[in-house]
Length: 86
Image 1 (cartoon, rainbow, N blue to C red):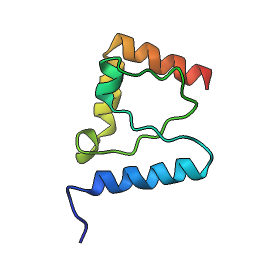
Image 2 (spheres, rainbow, N blue to C red):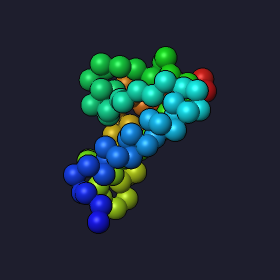
Image 3 (cartoon, rainbow, N blue to C red):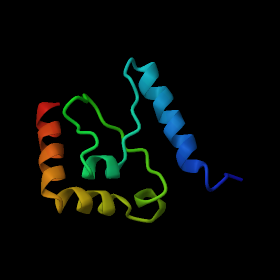
Image 4 (cartoon, rainbow, N blue to C red):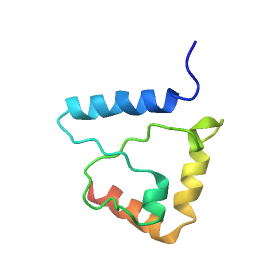
């Protein structure tokens, strides 16, 4: 039995450990952080999408992430620049 409410947290902690073990500093950044420009991707060298309680709870959840990025001009520019720089 897997505790449903804490699954996202368990995976986030697992990925934090993996990123840290690889020599990087893990950050917990949400789509809301990016959309509200509380943080940008310009200072990051890598990105890991671990899921959670919104987009990852449904089948084809990547479509939600893609649509959010694709239809937000500022976020699309930020992600495109991130991909080209890294």
